[in-house]
Length: 293
Image (tube, rainbow, N blue to C red; front, side, top):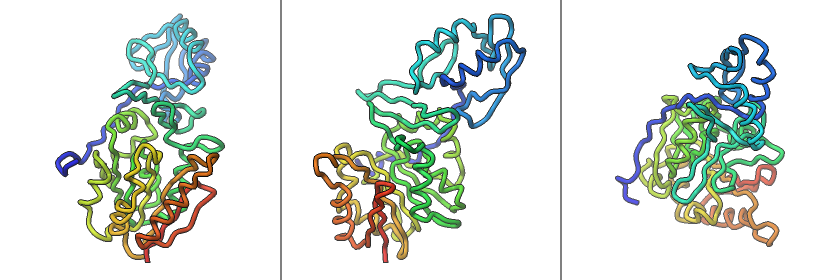
C-alpha cells in the first residue's frame, strides 16, 4: 500500500434505534402504559416511547406490538436489531466476511464479530472491562500521547480519553469495522477532537509518524494467521522508533494454538527483545508489556 492509499477518517456517529431481546421484553412489559422511558442505545442513554392501542411509537415510527412479539421469538440471544420501517439485524456481508454487532448483556458495550471471530474477550469479562485492563496495565495517564493500533470499536481509544490524554492516534484497516463503530453508541466518542483515526494499513501508516512521539502504544492486532506482518520484527522496530524513551507498549496476543503447544506470546517476546524492548509477559490479560529504555 502506498502512502496515498491511507487517509484521515472523519468519524460520524449514526443514531439508530437499537433493540436487544432485553429491550423488547422491557417494551412489552410497559405496553399497558401510555409512555415508557427506556434505552434504545444499548444503555448509553434513555428516551421516551409511546403506546397507542396496538402500536408502539418511536422516533416517528408506529410499530405493531404483535410484530415486536414475532421478532422477539425469532431473535438470538446476542442479536442487535435496528428499525427503519422494518426490523433488521445490525449485521452485513462484505467481501466474503460477515460482520455482526453482538450483544454481550443488558446495557453492556457490545463486541464486534467478524465471520465468527470476536474482536474482544467475552468469556468471564466484558469488552469494556477487557479494554480498560489494557489501558490501565500500560499506564495511560494525563497529558500523554497514545498510539492505538487496530481501532476496532474504539474502546481503548475512548478509555484513554477518560484518563486525560492529550492525543490519541488510532489506525484501522477495515472501513466496515468503522461503519459498525458509527452505529454503536459506545463508540461515538471517537469523534472527540483529541482522536485522529487513520484508515489504512498500520504497516504503512506508522512509517509516516514522527520519532519518539508517543508515551504509550496499545497494539491489539487480529490473530496472527490473519495479520502476520503486525507481529513481525520489522513492525516492532517501527514501534520502538515511535515510542519515547521511558515509554511502554501493551501488545495483546491471546492464546491461539495453546492446545497444540504453540506459544505465540513467547515468540512475540523474543522478537520484541531483539528490537531493543525489555518485556514482561502479562498472563492475566493474555498479552505482553514492552518497555523502552
